[in-house]
Each structure stands twice: as structure tokens, then as C-alpha cells.
Length: 239
Image (cartoon, rainbow, N blue to C red):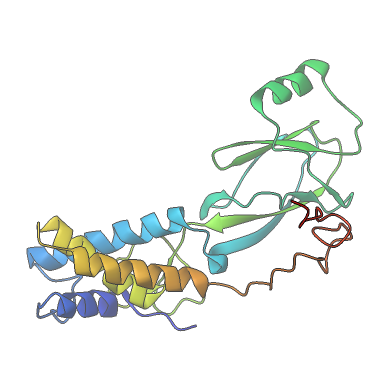
């Protein structure tokens, strides 16, 4: 999927608002385009927090160190992807996330020698119990907060657009309509039409973000557990 540059998105949004875009919004001294740059940063950060965009999920692994219980995630960490935390060494899922009362129980009982590691999270830190006495490879997924890719780079580089050639790693049509709506709101103009266009673009972007399976009420190809079939549907038609 191709992504537009920050400069192109601002230019398209400005044109929809009836404005003449400058050659480079990031070097412009026009207050409108200074505002456009700020709105782009705010919109991107909001969208990363509001929806789990599949292309921003990162698979990450690290090796535990003997006598070290706390590990910090990479600098682009935004939030956890639930139920992806595994101990690849034992091929067992990490137990948790353990709630605060359960975590205190683990500390009080000073659990050691268990086959399963338990975990507790605090912001961008993952804490395991019992404290490792050997190396274990922990694998998990998290959502990256980096949605900007600087020109010439092959991977995301940050969450703040600073140059017109920065690539915005979010649906371009969605971002254009978002900027158009946000500017009209900021200026006190009627933004109803822009809001409708943005909401449609947002739903399309979410729907196209990844493939989805066909829902089957009879069975699942990845589970041996029955959902609904002739053996567990209640009888009908008797009253």
C-alpha cells in the first residue's frame, strides 16, 4: 500500500478547504499552514491511539537476564497487544496480566521454580515473576506509536511530522478529510459535511486494514469446540 507524504496530505486538505497551498507547508509562515502542521500531528497521534492498525503491530522478542525481573519495551512502544505474551523457551504463554492483588500474592509467597512465568505491566515495562534464574526468550506483540517515516528511510522513524517529504503511514484519504474537518472546526466553520466525509473514510480505512475470516456458526477451522449446530440449538415451533 502506498502512503502519501505529509506535504501532499496538507496540500490536498487545503485545496478542499478552498485554500491555495504553499510549496512547503512546513516552512510556510502562514498561520493557516502552521496550524495545518499541528493538526496533522494531533490527528495522527489520536488515530494511533483510537484504533489498532494492523500494520503498526510489531512482533518483539527479548531474552531474560538472570536476577532481572523488569524489562522496558522499545522506544516506539504505544500499547500492548493482549494475549500475545509467550515464553518461547518453554512454549508456554505467560500467565497474566496479573492484577495488582494477584501480583502482591506472588511477591508475598516468593514463588520460585515454577514452569510458568507470570507478568505484570506498568506503562512500557513488563515485569515477570518469579524473577528469572535462567535465560528465557519472551515473545510478544505491541502497537507501535510511530506513524511517520522520514524520507529515504525503510521503517517508521517517529510520531511527529517535521518535513513535507515525511511519509504518513496512515490511510491518505482518511487523513485529508480529517485535516479538512479539524481546520473547519478550529476556525468555527460548519464542519458537518467534512465530518461525514471523514467518518466514511475512517470506516473504509478500518475495514480495509486487514483480511477478515468468514464467520461460521457451525465450526471453526482452528478450534475443536462446537459453537452452534443441531446438537445445541434449542427446539422451536412448539408454542
